[in-house]
Amino acid sequence: MPPRASHAVDASTGALPGAAAEPVRAAVTFALAIYLFGLALCVIGNTSSGASLLVRTIKGKIFTPVLAPPWLDLGFDYPFTYGLPEDADHVLEVAPFGDPAARLRFPADMAGERARRWRRLARAITETGGDPDRTARVAADVAAAMFEAFGPDVRLRVLRRARADVGGVDPGRLDEAFAARVREIDGDVQLIRDEPAGAVAPIVVPRRDPADGAESRP
Amino acid sequence: MSGPAAPAPAPDDGGVGAAWMRFWFEPTDPRPLALVRILVGLLGLALLWSWQADLGRWCGPEGLVTPASAAAWVSRGDGAWLAVVDAALGPRGVWAIAVASFAALVVGAGGTVVAVTAACSLALLLHRAPMLAGPADDCVVILTWCTAVAPATRALSLDRVLAGRGRVASAAIAPPVPSWRARVATGLLQVHASVIALAAAIAQLKGDVWWDGTAAWWLAARAESRVVDLTSAYAGSTYLMNLATHAIPAFEAAFAVGLWASAVRPAIARLGLVAWPAVGVLVGEPFWGLAMAVFAVPFTGLAWGAAASPSHAVTRREGAA
Picture 1 (cartoon, rainbow over the protein chains, first blue to last red):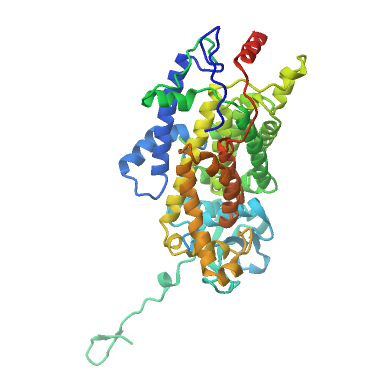
Picture 2 (picture 1 turned 90 degrees about the vertical axis):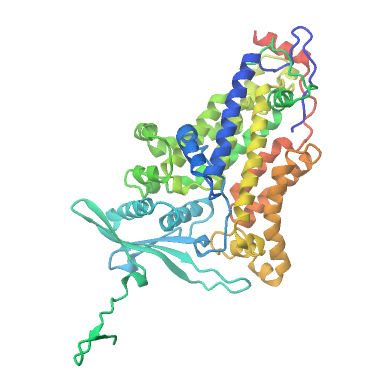
């Protein structure tokens, strides 16, 4: 608590200087009680704390419409790292499709909070925990904003800087976390995401043995 | 809104109701909050500066973050209000208003209206590109709303200087009258500081690296976003790495709890003035560390001199009348 001011009561009015009137105290008490309840629900409901569906529903229906516009619907979920690859620094790369040499990278040589905002944007594209449609939407919009500079067919990549193992040396390598071709056809923006190698592995068709008609693997 | 006829909250009564009244309504010195206001203004300006160069590229008409993708990223009700503001002012207009508001907070001009404008404009900017927002933005918004609740321009402010014109010098520089709004704002700062620190500590303790002592390494190994390179120090001393890792959530938890214990509150708050910026540097979010340090300012118990006496308060009321 901060240093308290003098609490001497005003002799002429019987009130503390600067004290609130009774109706004001009642109204503020009511508002504080509601807000503190909403704050608790926001912290519980906005984190990966395993909050129940009921908590999230109450928070979403009653408090989010009020607390979200002033940017108060927050969970303060700041782990900063879990030691996972997705906690590494992210780089956004855009290039004309088929011309990787003309690529632009962000944040490149920027520093400070400006660079952090670019890294957050890049990381947002690779986010896997949330709605895949919204990450695809962000990726498509980022790439589409580059159509004017690169033409209506671009390649968008998000790269993660590989980190040294504990006690090791910085490998100085960028790993691909997201890659997609984004193009505009008849006014529509198409995002064609590179599939992981496993998803596009060739399908093995069993060879038919001519001797007995049975199938056998090559 | 101060009520001259309001009976004083009974500070010596027992019970939950009396404790609630003491905590939220006992008039208190607004000067610590004036210092918070100045620091929040400076932090806000620093964060807004990071938008300056790329604002058009991020949020312009052909920007990378469209209103649709922003709307999909964060819940904000129907979002119609943002579309209206966006059409009327544009991101550059909102940014300019935010800069002017936070500059006014630094000098203490405009009173509560400016603080509310600063909070609203910063919130609007963050809604326009929510995926760019970081922990420091969240905390500065909270701090700005708390500043809006407080009568923060009653001290160390241009408003105060202008209000004192024509009076004798001693009246112009006299301590401000204690205020119940200052107490509410201080209470909100205390609640939020505690909640944020505890939520951060809990979020960290959900990860194994915060238990096995390697989180500090993984933070330092981010070659681009780290503020200082401590990898060689950590590689040379596992104990140092473990100490840095465990010290962060331990301090966060101690801060969250210590703010509620009157015996240790000033000590933990003063420690916070140094420790929070250090934590911010270690985790690669220096502005977040600074914002958390600002939360600690009102609880340091630093001497502000004598508060206004009741007779002075009466004089001011008469002067206002």
